[in-house]
Picture (cartoon, rainbow, N blue to C red):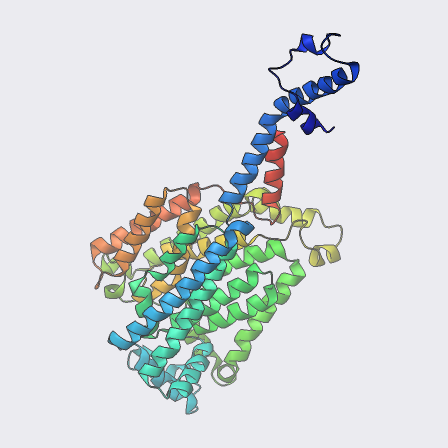
Length: 482
């Protein structure tokens, strides 16, 4: 008879402990069976709190972890529904909302000059000004003009497809990182401004950010070399993608050997040289000065984030230097106290890379002991690093909203704010970007909301950066319970 069977056979109210051993009560064989049943009953009663606690922990872990098999299908199904619903919405926007001409004609004029053989960047212009984007922009929009014959309506359809592809990539990042509840994925489809940027404005920001998100998908699957190639392609369309570069570099240091980092960066640089070759061979100074101009001063009227700053101060070098200082300082603080917290800080991590190596060959060729980064950590570092650059940007134009809108829900759920506060912050940011033209009050509110989100990210606990975190945590909790 097993312990559970004996325990169930024993009726505690039928026999007391004294009666159990009384000779007149039952035969010796029955006494032995009942004694075993009584001991098993006591053992089960003693162990039941620990067993119940273990069961409760497993259930809570299953319910709270989006990656658990029972919950994994729900965000996937909802993401598929969002793609279909947003595709229908995009089709309706293209069909019924008038197109707004801003930069399309300028893009086509610049493409025409390039296709006619012009290689001097100072002579490639459009009706809104000179060409200020790297060579990848020209190749992309030359292909778009070839497909659409320069017509707006087929280009809108093409950008509608691009919008859905970009949304699919972003949803994949969200589902795999497992940070948001499934219903919060719907926030990614609720921006009036972003729909307009893609299918009513046809800005090159859309192409650049789609390539950036494709690079991030490759990186979260640890395809670092190919991810860097796509990342460099995104930079060649528009340089705002460089806001992700500091975060990406730090992640590479954590995940790759120094040799691997060097090879990946060499490949990314090779993409820039290859795409820019026709211009570098003809007018290299003009190309580099125009395509990679980091000192551009934007028009105060179009600023969405610093309209509350007087124009004289807005265009001053003092403001530019101050914002750059805060940008670099914030990156260093987050890197040291957040992104490298579990390695003892950024300086300790760098020191350990040199200290643990016994030879130059080992220093160059060996990865860190822990190098398998989690998807959540990769996406967090990339999105937060870019958002720091957004907060410290001297000017954000309306199309620049696409630079960080798709990271907003993720960033909000990485804070410890209540869900209601997260939704209010999200709605507030969207509201500010839909005020046209921007005012001192709308830009001040946007700046305040950005600071609130940044503070929430700073005050939230740092995630464990490696893939074995959940298994270790659950095993420790279960061990303590038992």
